[in-house]
Each structure stands twice: as C-alpha cells, then as structure tokens.
Amino acid sequence: NAGVTQTPKFQVLKTGQSMTLQCAQDMNHEYMSWYRQDPGMGLRLIHYSVGAGITDQGEVPNGYNVSRSTTEDFPLRLLSAAPSQTSVYFCASSYSRTVDTEAFFGQGTRLTVV
Amino acid sequence: GENVEQHPSTLSVQEGDSAVIKCTYSDSASNYFPWYKQELGKGPQLIIDIRSNVGEKKDQRIAVTLNKTAKHFSLHITETQPEDSAVYFCAASSAPSGDYKLSFGAGTTVTVRA
Image (tube, rainbow over all chains, first blue to last red; front, side, top):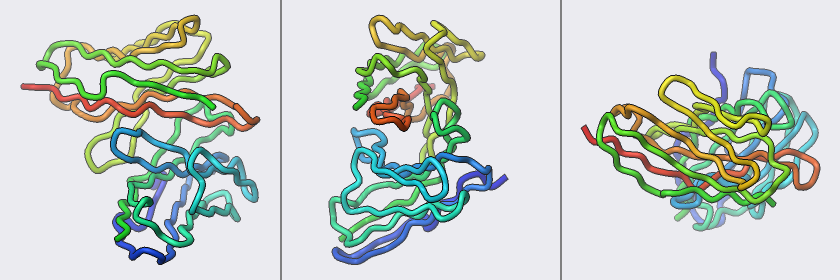
C-alpha cells in the first residue's frame, strides 16, 4: 500500500520562485490537509479539503494555494517563495471529514528558500 | 480556535523507566485526542487515540488518560525501550467554523538512555 505520497522529498528555491508540492493518496479518503512543521511550533495547518472541489484555509494560509480536482490529489502551490516558508511540509489524509479517525501522513518535503 | 499546549518539550529517561507527556486544550467542544510519534526523517504516525466519552485507554506499554473537566490529557509510556526515542505530538479535534480540524501541540522529544 502506497498510502500518502509526497514529492519531492527535498527542494531548494530562490526567493520569488514558485513551485508545487505534490500529494497523492490511494485510500479514497475524503479529508486531506497540508501542514508545515517548524522547530518548537509543532504542526500548523495551512489548507485543508473535505472532498473534491472543496478547500478551505487553515491556521497559516498566506502565500499558499491549493486545489482538489480529484479525491486522490491535493497539490500545494507556493506563489512567490519567501525565506519564511523554509520548513518541512506534510500532507495528510483521513477517512472521515470529522477528523476523528486516523490521519495518515506522507514522508514530508523539506523546503529551503534562499 | 483550539490551542493545544504540550509539556515538556524534551524528556530524557533511563531505559525501563516510565515517560509521561502532558497536554492541555482550550476548546471544551473538542472530542477526539490522538497522539502521534515521529521518527527521524519520517512523517508522524498515530500510536493511540482517545475520544471524549472515555477516561483512559491502554495499548500494551502505552496509555492515554483524559480529564475533560480540566481539559487535559496525558500519554504514559511504561518500560521504555530505545525504540521509543522519537518526537511525540498530542492533538485535539475541534470544529470552530463548521469543519473539523486537528490542532497539534509543539511536540516532545523523548530520548531513552540505554
């Protein structure tokens, strides 16, 4: 079982560049989300989706866009990268939109903006 | 929104001793409290969870307790082993604006000394 797959694993960007972090799940989960992990701050929710065609903002959405055209895919776009976006990004999916079931996480993307 | 605080931020224990991590939450409507373990270079993985209608749950060497009145919950690991060394996150599920979201604590780095 592939579970949640994130690509790339590592990325270095220059300030002002744009890029898309890919996330795909093969478990037919309704709920998908993106988090960023920074030292001493835990995991903070960027954007989430409760189903295809539905997305909403989390705690730290500025500078990021998402779309959910299929159940399987939930890409995260950085519009104009800034050094403050240097972080480890995790995609997660859950069976239930009430988030009271296990969230499955990808392996993460380590992003450095210089 | 929900605010989850986690203590301590680091914990060093002798192999065979117990480890306890404590979390508090702010939203009295939160009803699902999972714990995740993150090993180096990997995404978080669910190790145990508890729902608001239960006060305690055990799974082998791991137990979680919940005090809804005081709005705090704790993770207990007994007979610690070197493979328990990892970062542990608590989380709480709430729906401040209709959709449920997971809010995470800042994490506890547990080191088990051989």
